[in-house]
Length: 240
Image (cartoon, rainbow, N blue to C red; front, top):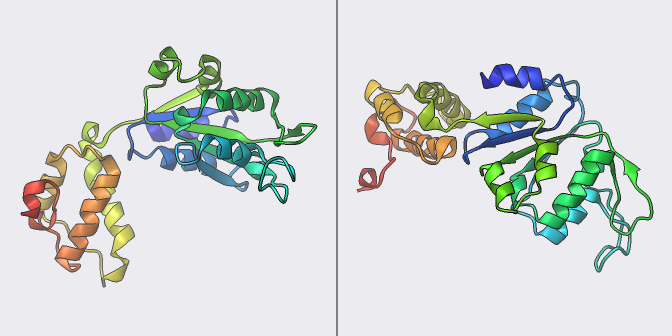
């Protein structure tokens, strides 16, 4: 169902808001939208809004002129202009401070950015995709996220489901992850029936990231041979 929506959304240039728990593949969906759109040859740039201080995030996104602030010895065009003709992913956009949200809203409405210290705005052609692991309407009601920006970003809403809600995906994802990490072995190891049952019975609160960690450990413990349930160290009692 998500794949079908990705194909439809990629034909549009409208903003997309992807919500879901951490580790459920929100950035993977964003990249798929970019790669199947007519912007695929353009840049795909991702910014983690939670990892950058607010004062730095503004300069990072919109750029700045020389002398705009202490330490601005050379001008910087900013990520919006760097992503011109492509896609900008604002990861965990719900962590963005309210004053910066207002500036982001203006960029989305006017399709132009004003670098810090600049006298005039510059046009940008960027498809914005935003993600959040929070319930965005709750953030709006709590006054932590602007309602007008929420509706501007939420033109195409997509939701990634937790791994516990789609147990049928666990084995295919596990095989894909083993293929990714088994490069140091002569061949990709098999997974025993008891190991598959253990994988599908667990709830995976950390979603795909947790599954990937477990499988990387299992590869080491099995030395590249068949992975059994004994190699899957998931819960605390498995480590005893």
